[in-house]
Length: 217
Image 1 (cartoon, rainbow, N blue to C red):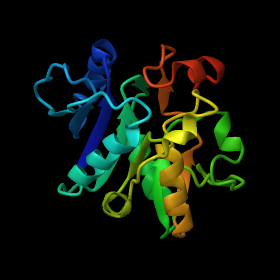
Image 2: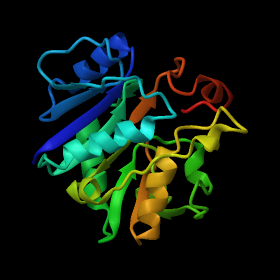
Image 3: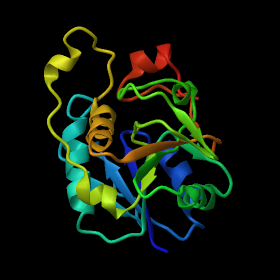
């Protein structure tokens, strides 16, 4: 079983090293996607340094590039993690087992963060439904597990800058775009019900004002 863990990072060397430490005894490959043009390469893992800091308003371009590069890879499972998380013991095993347990031919991804959002509609206006150990939510929060089908199919388009005209605290819009893309194609997007990951209570690099108002658990 081949697993690739993709970590998006920006100026969080300490947190990034902590996360890599947790993954070092796992049978996984790791690819770091560094949004800091002046970032320093970390040895022993795959490393891509972007030429610009995309921030939230160009995050769509970053993820478009990431998915395009990943189409040239061949793994059974792809995980996507931000740099500001701490993994529970047996994280990889628990997440993969949970994904495999979803008996649904139309499943496309499983989001990993567990917070109040799994109890209400988000982006696609779909009312969440419990499904054994997971929740059918029909949205993706960019911290998730998927298979190659997701990578091959996903299409990222430019996010209209007018999105932030009336509210600068809005997020990147990438998760919303991905959610609608797969939902409209008849795929099912799930969310973990049990916590396997903890979000660190540190200042958000991309959307710090919104994070202060609505904390991720």
